[in-house]
Image (cartoon, rainbow, N blue to C red; front, top):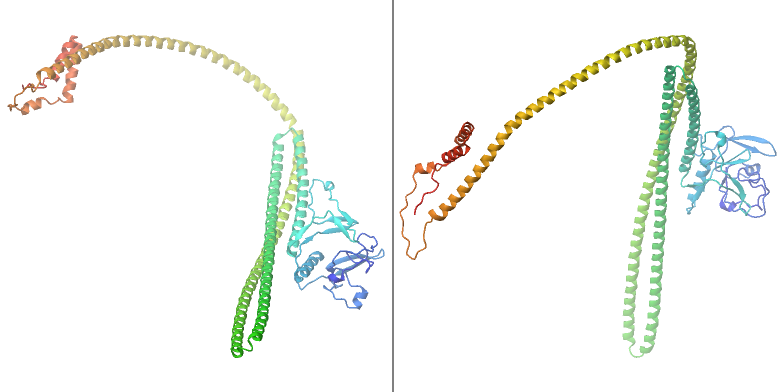
Length: 595
């Protein structure tokens, strides 16, 4: 590989046979124009020519014709020349790394060595059989491979003598590792698409088998077993498909997250270093401006002082020569002291600024070390993810192999089931006819038995309904008799209740009248008079009289109530019994007149 510096950019006037692939002509076969090409060639991937080998042109990667690692086919004057080259760079790449990742790595190395701001976009195309295909374009999986529509890609000229391809998928390149990861993801997507096509063909074959099973209407038992077997096979295939798709989605999401995080972190670090460089440059400019301003001020001050001193010396030279000389010396000393102080202050400021710059450099170094450790950890995680993806790929291949074996086993079982169905169809027709005849005879016998059973059941229902009606009439008669007995018991009870209420009312009226008479007439303690009241003798009640005032117990009252009720039922004189009960219950004297 021959490196080309930016100053060695080929022009159409410098080289007539310009080629973007191998340097053997134009990319589109047209002759070069007289205009210049605005293309910066960083590196060419081609073998050395005789002139370049003779003048010992410096190369980036050596080529070895004895090892068959990468094969490049060149067409010169309608002749195909096969050459094999080994591209190696100190063992950093695996043995199967091709030209594309190595070229991307070389481009990044050159751009980072220049310490310039750049934004790089990568497109990958393939030229085969005079057709251009985009390697980064997402493929649309369809049921039939013939239905896949390719994205149109146009080869155009930029107006400056160069060519470009329109319609390619672009990806922002932050690191060559990310580009390799995206290419691996594209290859995995293609493998998943192939697996999906294989599964669709398997599903179509199972659908055809299910259609054949639906066409057979006889011998449902055997066909149901075959349907269950095919259903289990289809269910297992669907579950395997779901697992495969879920695993693929998880792997793709994990890789996408890793790519996004690395991109965002790299962008943040780039912006941080840019701002840090900007601040450092601003501090340097401020320090330089301050130093130049101080120097200018000091020089102006010295000039002004010298002019003033000379002017004063000319005016006062005759009068005060000695005094003027002493004053000039003192002033010069003061000015020198001031200048020394200013220089010391500027030196201290410069030392402080240098210390700040050193601390900033230390922080940038620590940040760079942390960034390198993070990139190493991200690379290790990426390697682990790729290993897990390889393991999942092996598992998917094993599962697909098992599914194919199950499908073959199902097809063999279907063939054997079909043969057994045909044999049973021939052997069981006579048995089915005999079964039908026997069924008809048994149906006739059962019909006679059923008619006799129905007639006996109707007779039993008639007798049962008559018995039920007679029992209902008897129960109604008993209900009427019970109602009459209850009415004969309730009527005298209602009369007794009315008599009791009337007697209770009369007694209440009598009690209220007696209470008013006693309280208003008999128990007046003092009469209004104008004389002085005198002490009156009072006879206190005895213990026996107090005991007589106590209320009888509940048992005594209950016995009196039941005696009164029994005497009422015996004699019929309710009023006399109630008066006796009241007299017995209230035999005590309620109050005693003291006046």
